[in-house]
Image (cartoon, rainbow, N blue to C red; front, side, top):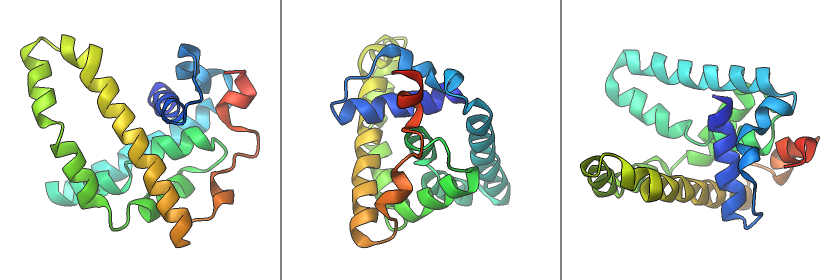
Length: 168
């Protein structure tokens, strides 16, 4: 879970041309936010699991509602799990179908990756997919701020984020 948040932060920083190092993938282990990251990602997965118990469709919808939690947590590690989940819900409000179509656009790539024993996936598809999701996060964040759903201060970490506290 901390590596997932670190990876989200790495891709978020790379699409913003910040040139992160590979060590930033593991920055949650060194930043002192390890336990809060584990808690946030546990609650994220628990909520999706509980919604999925109702039926598969609500679980899928909530999965798209909460899709931005790792990116939010990577940008501001001081936020609680509920704050990250609520911000993600606000950001994806009205955009869940767009995110679903984005995932659908990668089905061919994932099938092609399977046909190559995941070699193509490791070398090209997964980095491309994760970069696309990071771009979607940045677009949703900008739209949420511009529409007044969220304020820019909610995205400003008090300690500068994982990278400021770890040197990455």
